[in-house]
Image 1 (spheres, rainbow, N blue to C red):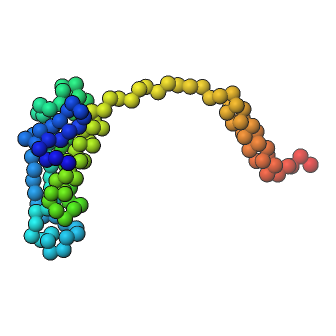
Image 2 (cartoon, rainbow, N blue to C red):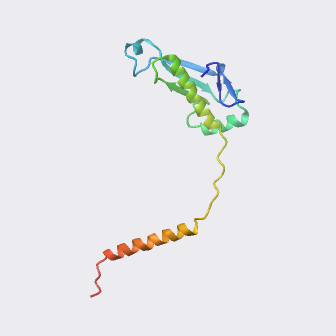
Image 3 (cartoon, rainbow, N blue to C red):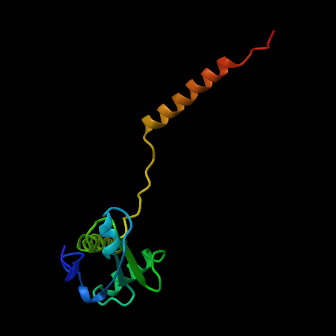
Length: 143
């Protein structure tokens, strides 16, 4: 994954100047290396002010990511690797996947269908069978 731009599709790429990076000490694996290396990465991307996305896709992404945004900004944290470089790549990959899902076109509306004649008949037969089994359990007090 390149750090100079983030390619979402063939036509859409976000230049690296639109990203903000923050680094801090990470918890987790790494032994004494963790205590001295700023390997945790936070990738900050201001979606609301981005020039890379067309207006229609930006509006769709802002609507779909509304619960994740803080003042139009997405923050992705990565600390699963020991090296800062790998965490930067992981954060970029996560942001790319998040934005691809956010700008994807909506699914076509569901077309309602009727159950087949056979499935209706099987359901009714199963109901009759179950009713018969439960009826056998009843205590007959017709004496």
